[in-house]
Image 1: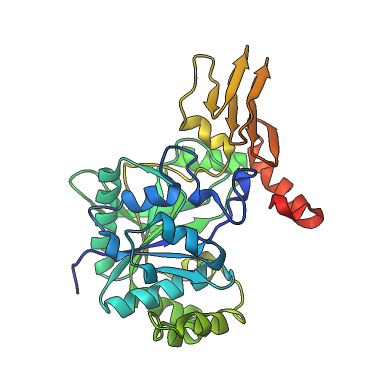
Image 2: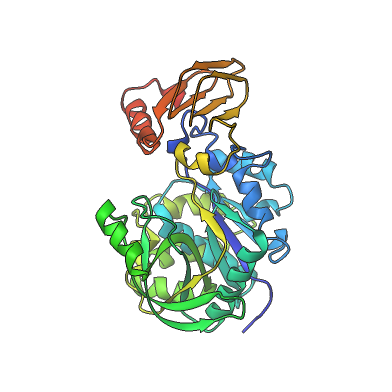
Length: 362
């Protein structure tokens, strides 16, 4: 089996609705520089290097986002940024990615990861990936678990079974007992207390042939539909072939299609820091604040404010007096005001706009 550097496949088709009004359908979270000067997808590619060079990175995105994604990632071969014509959930994305990686190298191992997480330091992350790749060489499916820092109700969890291996620097490989959905608060606390659960990072490693074999077993219709498309990759016929194959596919997540069905799954627990930065509230942990706990981005002025986030991308100044525990985000055409702790509900505003407009705010 090949021990060359693995391929990395970055899933970058999401809309990041919980970061509205900054995140929009045409400019979602992964393409924004919310945390620093680089965008989240640029940071995702950067933290893989030098372990995975840019020419071994693929991005699966949407037609609407492909041009901007290519512009932000000029170091990637242009054909490695692949645009799904319609969204068909993660199983189709995984199947397509595995078929393309297999075309590049029939013995390749691939790492699948989202475009919009905050992870560091890069060397510890790469060390955990390397353990996952070595584990995947032997077959089976590998995921990465994060030791919970608190009883989160916003993440799925992985229940771990016996330990199979521990590297010299403490990276652990265990069998997966089962995957569990996002729990309620009491259940989440019991998971953390037991020590037997990890947060599900949404990062996976497997050999392309192994995951395609598993998908052929559990969702044969998916592999049958997409396999011919991969043969035209790199040619002028690819986009049309992909659109024709994708349109009739039913939506199914890789969790349901594969992870809940497969019996040989291992989980790597590394010691890197991880946050999926799922909402405005998550930024309080990642952005510098003044002595009163107020985070300022853009033109802002705060008097007697505490524990708040003020972010202006509107060209206007946010002037605030006496705020406590409020998130205020201003863009050229919209302003969000939301209590800290409720920013998961921002998605409800986007849903309301989808239903009744105005559509230009989406």
